[in-house]
Length: 513
Image (cartoon, rainbow, N blue to C red; front, side):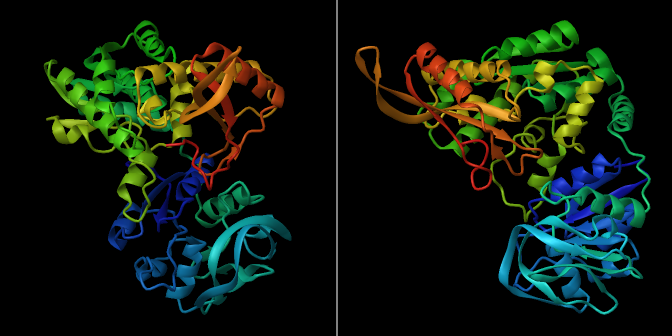
């Protein structure tokens, strides 16, 4: 990004925690971005980063196809911190030795720290840290000093202060590492010399001015889904160009109860946006007939959305720009070839390739979800949209296991509404960060009144998580679950059994499809 005086680079080797590292750094008011480990040294030097972090990786440094960066990176003098795989890569490239460990370290372990290191001083004398590695450093490179160890890892941290190179085998960015934030802060502030001048508010002001200059007196269209990302993106563009923005809301019939009306009401009545609402419910359901595979559902819905949007956009005159609610995780996960794809993203690519626009406006493409919500608060976006439960792009279609039908949608909407209503009403000590109902494809025998029934099973899912990379199931009180179960089977036809999902992430994902 332009006009940012302080920034940290994460060179990504496919690590599952790379985004968490970036968020931790941004939380202390320093801008951080993620790029592939293949990024050229010249590009890195041109960007004038204050520090560089080498991420973890599913690869092995001692494997035949190990991911590696340019060795000249370590001669630049830019402060470098290697985390897990990044630490082993530093040792491997600079003349140390990495070997397969006899005992894998995974989970929370006790690490003993040195008080002489700037990085480990705040964690001295010892602390619980999160580790996940099979390889370990057995010989440190010349000029390095060991600054931390554990029972099974002689080199938990090492450093070469003359070359400004630091390494750690544990993950300071995850919440399981006690005082890990102090470790990161020490690197960013004390070693890289950052002062913390970046903020989401300053980002918004800069982005709005940039949109004004880019658009001029031309028109912009934006697809609104009712989600946080597209809503905040639209409000930013509206702030910049006012009535030159035309929003198109495609109601695909896969939203939760009352959401379609809520979106229309908020954006037309409160924010006075130029909104066109398209009812395409029957069109989407026709396309989904007979489809049971979740990825196929996603692709059909994404493709049909594009078709509907394109048809409506062509009816408008003088539109030069397209606004999309793309956020940084979409860009990262779609752009890094060594990152494994869990499910397809709907915001990256697609629309620009089939329509003739002068330019694409993506005002949120450098922000994470929590930062997008901060922007939403700046624009006074109502809580029912700003803090709405995370919702997949394909909507209820991927919370219905198997084929999507009008009847199944009706069942799931009512069951999900009851679940959400009772959670809000209940006094749960630690309320879940995300909770929703799933209509399974399982029918079971039951007794309704004096008659035998053979109806659907509804599953309930509720999790607590700070970053959604990992999650624990929420221990909702039995009496609350009992009330939810009773209401659903009594008020929702064709449901006779309720189950509660008590699986953590990993091994399960939060969503079922």
